[in-house]
Every structure is written in C-alpha cells, then in structure tokens.
Image 1: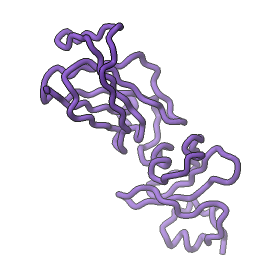
Image 2: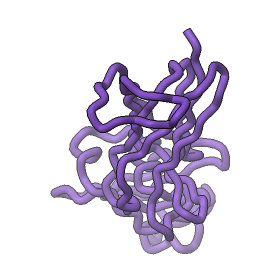
Image 3: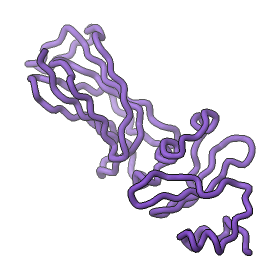
Image 4: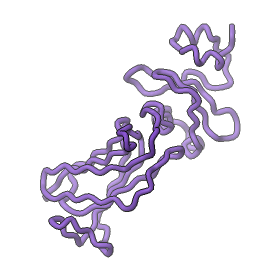
Length: 195
C-alpha cells in the first residue's frame, strides 16, 4: 500500500509549541487526492489518535494515500484559535504532510504549560480533570496546584533535560535552607519554613 507521513503541530501564531495536546486524524472516502477535494458527504474509513510531544508535534507514519480531516481536544486552560475544519492530503507514497492546530499568543514556554505538569507528574485522575494553576514557573522550579477541594499545591523541580518531579507537597515542613541548598530560587522562599 502507498503510504506517507503526517506531522500534526500544536503551536501559537508566533511559533511557540503547545505540548501534550490530544490530536486526531480521520481518513475519508470517496475523495479526489489529485484535486485536493474532500466532499462533505464522504465517509470516515480510518482514524488515528495521538498526543503531541514537548515540541508540539505528533508524527503519524504509514498513513495511506488519501484525504484527511484532523483536530484536537484542547487541554483545560489553553486558548485555541477558533478555526473551521482542518484538511490535508497525502498525495503520494513517501510524502510528508504537515497540519497545524493553533493556539492564541501569548503562551507559556512549553515546559511551563499547564499540560506539561499534568503529563510529567503523572497525577491522579481527579487532578487530570481539574484546571491546573501555575503560580510560579522558572526554568527548573515551579509552584503548581489544581482547582479541587483541599490543598493540592506543590513545589516541583526538574533537571535541564528531565521531566518535572514533586519536590514537596503541601502541607510540608521543609526548611528554606534545605530548599535553597537544593537549588530553589529566591522567588520560592515564601513557600518554605524559615528554620
């Protein structure tokens, strides 16, 4: 079978990647790939789901030559650009085709996007369906919480190449001196005990 590759991108108009967005592609027939025509009455004959990575890309390989519509499920707290149906066409074997799903500017850098914390921290389901609030986010440290009953706030950290990890969950009794020696920036001092 003749196949190509489809790359879906989730970005802002200025090119900032929006990471960890659930995306989907649906193939339709009949269609005329050479005319790039996907009629309204075409039937869905295949579907694929994925999630964009930290760079805002999802790659689908082995996609049959044909006509496609693609879309997304915008994560809570994001602001997608309201656009109509998105179509793309894989016209020949070996071809790579790109599709863009856009979000409004300004957007946080990908490592500080709310959905990055949800992805990296592997949080429980009740938090996954709640709105993530990023109170502070610096290159390697952040304070996040979720809009749920009780105290869900936590300080998280990461290495320059690694995912976010819990540093402390609230309530806690970690001293500022320990957090400072572990590399916490001064902007987080108020989240720790002075001891």
